[in-house]
Image 1 (spheres, one colour):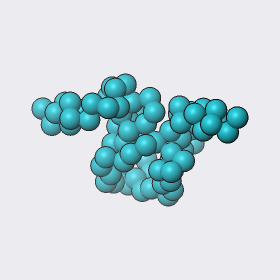
Image 2: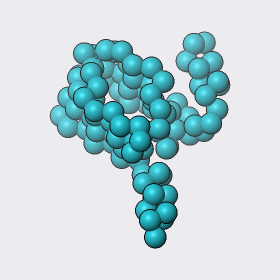
Image 3: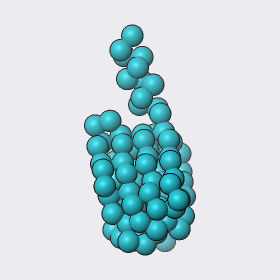
Length: 95
């Protein structure tokens, strides 16, 4: 029974945006890059690029996939759904 619960959590991906000033994300497996203007992270549903201003991470727990970011958010974009192909993601970003 517990293995089914862990499997469900592994594929759970939720984004909650509060007044464009706080984002809570579940299903995060890796943070690739982070600075005040951009966050690039791998989620269970693909690579997510978050753009904004004055962003800071309030919470990051990669063990359970939770992340919380505060700042002024401009856009959230999924780059692809294939989380295993990181090399092609980086090539696309730096073209």
